Image (cartoon, rainbow, N blue to C red; front, side, top):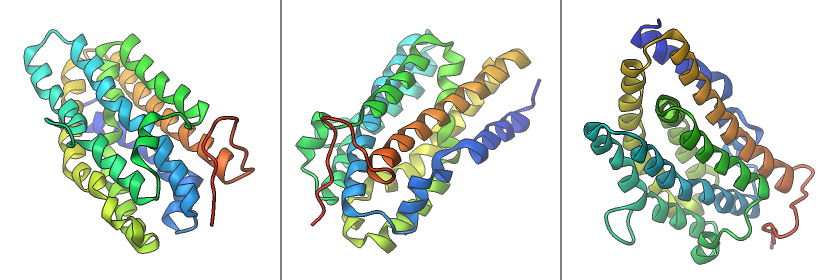
Length: 240
């Protein structure tokens, strides 16, 4: 059995090796080499992922018979949906999309997202719905290493795309939300994985989540960078 620190280190190794901070699309973003249209495609497609997060968390919530777990986990749903209309992470993401020049209502409809985005995100819902609760919780642990990426992203977006500065509230909120959520999830996995095999299943679930995030960026890169072939019905860049 891995100790708590060894388990946390194993999760962090997955992030170091496979998290999407290494993806070429993100590297282009952080180097200031994406056009406004490419950023619009990113914001539009990423919205579908953001909009599924509270659904993912509601599925996890519904699978637990532990009231204390449900009380702790429901915070995540509120973080994204808000306590009232006009609040929460989803609304903040729409504000970011609007800062790129998109109409928020257009983004929310999701009609122009890439098919691969839809398939990848829906597969994440399948993981939390069909695997063990332990694996479902572990799959959320990209939050364990997202803070560093968010910090870097905010710096680089402000530097290279100053016209986006007014739309970065989503990332600002995640700077404190993500570490809190990750601390709870790591502790949960440690306390509820009773064999080394279960620990390895949890690590594999996080690896699969990283692959899902990577696949979303693969689709964006193929459609809007190289070779630049968006499929029928997908968003089309209209550069001025």
